[in-house]
Image (tube, rainbow, N blue to C red; front, side, top):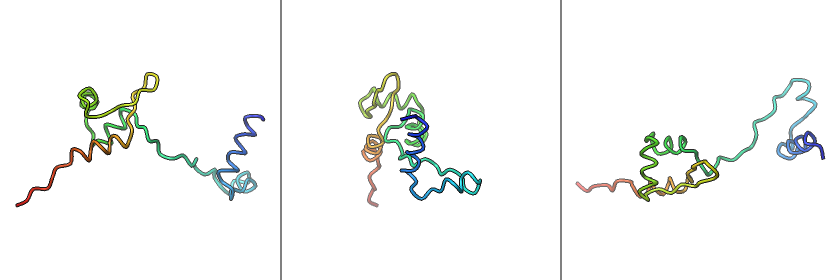
Length: 97
């Protein structure tokens, strides 16, 4: 099957209500791709997720064993579940007055 035909079939499957005739007449725009949010975040995304900490702080947390990273090739990625666990472990306990 030709790659263009595969792409069209993918769009048809993802958007069963999409009308090609309206699209070609300029009446509709192609909808955005239905891609789920990634479970793995880049270093920059992970630092933002953790409230804007620095990359060095993030790397220190990994080196100190407080946070785990995922290496894929040369990329260092961070699992959202690990980041959420880190946040949960470091929440302050409410003090009684």
